[in-house]
Image 1 (cartoon, rainbow, N blue to C red):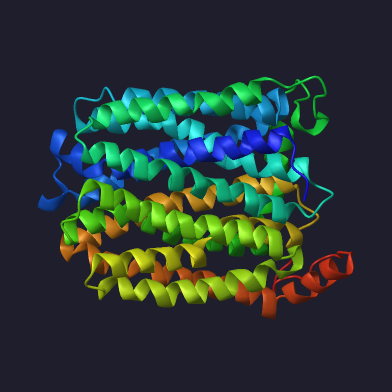
Image 2: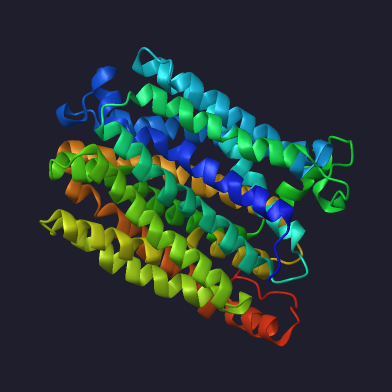
Length: 419
């Protein structure tokens, strides 16, 4: 594997994206008290709605990001995305009430949607002739690197009574680093990352229309929904779990999020390095079954150290889902535009993050937050069933064998349907 300067720009972007996405969960207890939706008094649903609310502009941004990248290029579009994330998080620091916070997070959501929709095809186009799935796993691993490095520091500062508003400003400013790296195209621009100067709306709609007519696409769409929902449900609520159910300090809450992300970081980088493209579906199925078994124990472990160990193991299991499902889908649907598939699949994963965050919050309000984590194994089992159905029943194993041999033919259709 060979990395260049745009790889490092994407690494920085994923780090900024992760911290911008998770600064609110890290400071959620303080925010809830400051803005009058106390989590301990039935406000968990409101906390989950913050994530669902920012998911809506994310999906909207993803639906148009293909046209934006066609006109302005992947590189410049992602640079603008970093600026939008910065603005949204800095403005969140100025919020005086709950609905104002929800409104300004929509701006951050627009930037995050562009990152979610375009970062994967950016890496795919950059390494399209060199097993792109491996580079995607490594790049996505820097989501976890950002959390592992920054969240404990932010939680430590929060524990020392540093204002959550200052921490939001600090995180927002960090998004300027990838913005500058991506705005500078360098002396040797990469052609496939630059735009063609046209808004090809008709072409984009045609590509989307072709994809959504495939039953195989909807199988992977559902798989991404459950993959994103289960993974982010743990990420969003892990700090609150320690603080509300175990009366832990803000620092320990941040460590909880960081420990889960450390598992994801190790899992994604390891799978990117050691797991070959044709092995991705097997990896997803094994990890989903393991993750579902691990997640059940969140309802029973009674010590902080036990929860931290469990979070690390759950992070290892959850690591490959998002990039691997996307890459496997593209392998299974080679006659479809890959960028369109990446974007549409992200349009499933992002709402999954928001919806499952709300569902877990609602379960937490009705029972307690420990039992809310039982939602996660349900998601992972459904993910394993969907990927297993395609792999064992619908010819995915044949595609993987062709990839291993260096050639890919036309995929087998789903039973009773045209692919």
